[in-house]
Figure 1: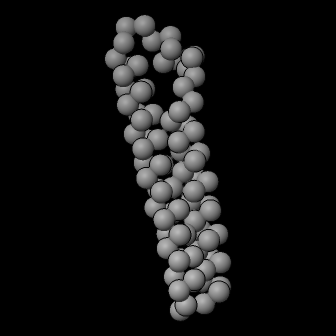
Figure 2 (figure 1 turned 90 degrees about the vertical axis):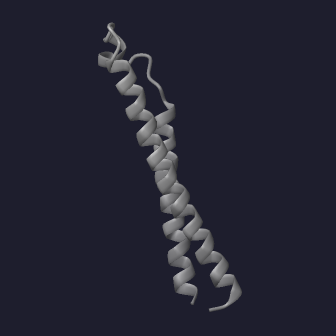
Length: 81
């Protein structure tokens, strides 16, 4: 395995690891947000999801994108070897 292949595989692994961390953070943040809302007396925001908080969903979307990029990079790195 040449040096470039090792760098490509490491980059793919980095993206996969980053994606998994982002998915975990997004899920925990969303759960914390809805748990906090469910404890309030006025549940209108909890039931209607208005106003919509985009951040937890966008972090998870970024995680899925990072996982896809990492998988493609890993496959390319394995095909080069």
